[in-house]
Image (cartoon, rainbow, N blue to C red):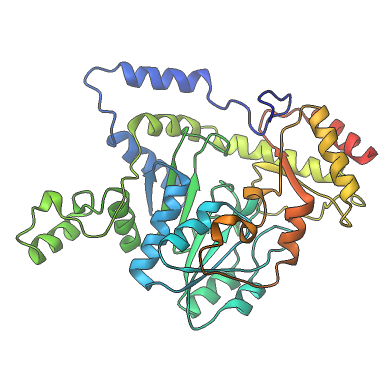
Length: 389
């Protein structure tokens, strides 16, 4: 695979101002670098931006997936979980590793996310939760889906790793489920190099998130929860009381400093990406490529390209064109396509429903980068070349 592209999936988004903030922080005398006040400040600022009560900064979006799944296990026990087959391995791996049975249902071609109708068809008496992935930055949530999960006592997880700033009815994606997560990996809307966030409006879930982040230790939780364990377990050292079988998924002060700097320009970058996406689908030939994506509420960190009519010859020509023009791309879109076709599942129990759409995207879909610095003429020229194939 090439290492240098004219049009990358993401440009270097760490600016000189970011670097100055980092070096200024590093050069302060007697500085603390492990999780501390900067992590807490970033959590508070992220909660304000996202519109949630609580946020917990962790070392990756994938770690956040494990924490959310662990919380679901504590609160609901194990069982079946309906999950998108189009997403990332970290949406599924925690389920099988923690004893759940993934149930894969199909996605909509308009937003590439699982639909309420498909969820309803898959629900059984064993279903305990739903993992809803906002694929490539498309909004996937709606009132009916939220109500269905509440009415059926299903734990609703929103994976927003690719969808910072996506909205539904003026509320940001990730602010309406039981719990949600974001990734701050280098290729996403903002970066802390590695990092992720667990968000919720539920205090109990927030307490669990802090527990699972730090070995299960109670010392980072609220005073009331610490007192509860002191009273109930008087013979255990309160500094080393482990309430759940947690992990070490803490992040560091340096990462939080970078996140605080990047957050200042996140809205501006999202607006640019939204403009790029609208231009992209308005310029593509709708006879050859899918263009009827859902625009409302989307915050696309990439530009999807799905070939119509199972045209394998055209798909191959598209890949050759992109290769020759030094445009970086990923086949299968999010996470390489259909997770139900991946070898890691062969040793585990799972179930699939009709996956017609996700299999089509797996075979005839790809995406290219949508970074804020893209020149509009670049987008138009690439569309012209694609349309001429």
